[in-house]
Image 1 (cartoon, rainbow, N blue to C red):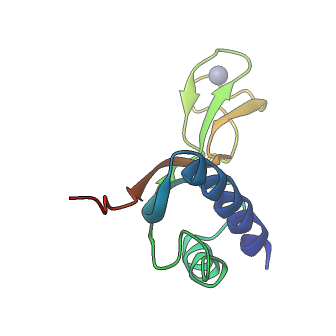
Image 2 (image 1 turned 180 degrees about the vertical axis):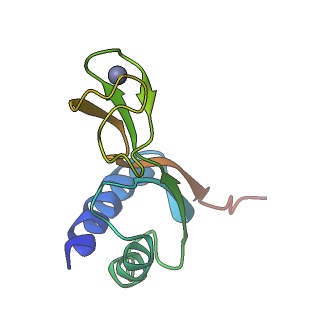
Length: 120
Ligand SMILES: [Zn+2]
């Protein structure tokens, strides 16, 4: 599963960061997932649940922010969403466009829980 590899990278990265900050566990993770990132949100959630077992992220909630793809016309420089016209610019009709948003798969934020203070 493609998503499992992605999720394992995310878990690895957060585990390292959370450990260095002294967090005992991670309560939730917010991911930005682009429309063209190649990862399916429901598959990511399932992969996350499995891959997080036994880590600091065990039982953490995965929140997914889906990012809609956005294109930028190489000719007129306007941005637009791919639609019925495909990747052709709806303003000038040019065929070349760059993807400026929609490829991301990144951790936006996470919430860690610090070690409880044992002393009185
Ligand atoms: Zn254009």
